[in-house]
Length: 133
Image (tube, rainbow, N blue to C red; front, side, top):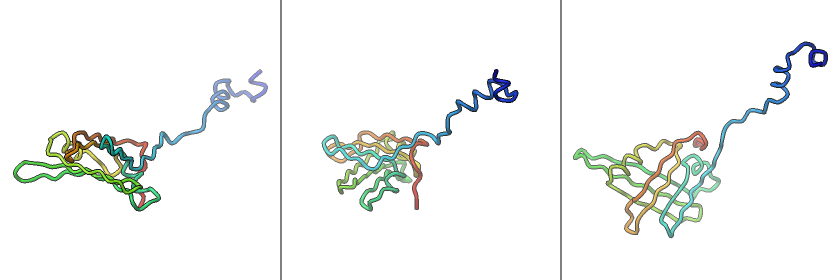
């Protein structure tokens, strides 16, 4: 019957055409800066923050390294309400996390009451948008 209806095309080819789904570009997320002042955490994706509609938000985390061998990481974020959280650390794992960031990474960090970074999580993922000019 399929031969008569579809002029000799195999049933498999017809099924593939009939039931093929449309293509998807992949998971997309937009994480602008979120700050939890009680737990002293900040979260966001650099591309989403840069592409946000407001000119208030920012987020960064960087490391600098001295000739003496010591290193320091500094992370900071400000949300759209103007709330800012900043921390720093000389801990090797925290510095390594700061060094692992790319321009389009997602960043989550936590500070203690003294402004020391006690946790830094970085994520490089295709789901976050690149920064627009």
